[in-house]
Image (cartoon, rainbow, N blue to C red):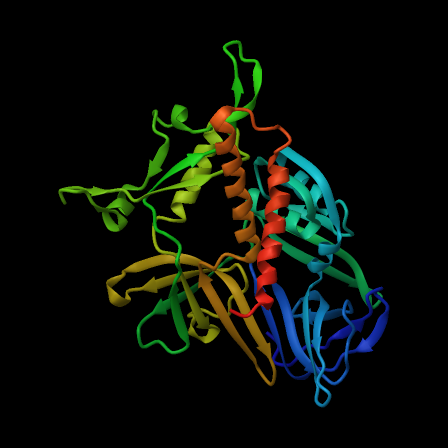
Length: 406
């Protein structure tokens, strides 16, 4: 990595060149897998909201958009800019029902109203979801979640300005470089965080609510029992991890057997039992042990620097854990100044605001299915898309509470 502050090329919102935006002191670049990508710095010049900042990061170009400035009467301006992906917040998708679509097709629908295009896609399989009254960035994040891919923006420059804006949609960003982190109590510059997600050793999986039909198979309106996978799983509607049960389960009433800690997952858009079984097994693999993250200075790694998405071998024998695993770099914060300092988050990451909202959508959609099951008369108009719109509004109202004093 270069050891100096990068040059910031300054453009207005119409991509017309203004000049060089001088940086005072250091510049902080904070990026997360499938999440935020921001820069913060001080400058004596004051860019306007929506101005575009172009800079070279090693061998790649990055583009950010000014979203906030703090301008004191005296002293430099504080500039906060986000990845130019944020411009997709201004592109709108009315309604798209994606059924049995490939990842490439799904990304195409998300990017359709934007000026971005798909550079490449290596995510296999088909899936489906509903995009209803959402901005294009929300849609792109939703596609990444459903098709289990990762989004990387690619900027090309020609004749002193941005020539193309493209997306690489890949199964996994980053690579294995042979890096290793050994965690110990007396380690300097490292913090371990055990996140608050529940640990389950077995999961029930439920899909879309099944339509209500008569004896002849004719649709009667409404929905009832949700899809399960027992028919492709030996008659059992749950999957478990026996090794995890012995470690993270609990005693039965007589303290003679260790039993599973059960949970459930919902995939309200899944209509195939085999697919539901696969999705549930994948969800179980992510929840059978505590979610742990390690925040470390890059100097703590053995083997060199790490990029976003790279895989790191983690050895954590403190407090008798005996954890030996491979974990990924999910966040990287670099400060460019006289030298470059780098702070990494390795392992699990806290759920982003988008993921929390998406989870609320799924839960309310599940509730919709439960209500329909009471009498089978719920209006067909009460669709997942309608629920998504309602939850989006509810989340917006929750955000408004930030301005209140408690």
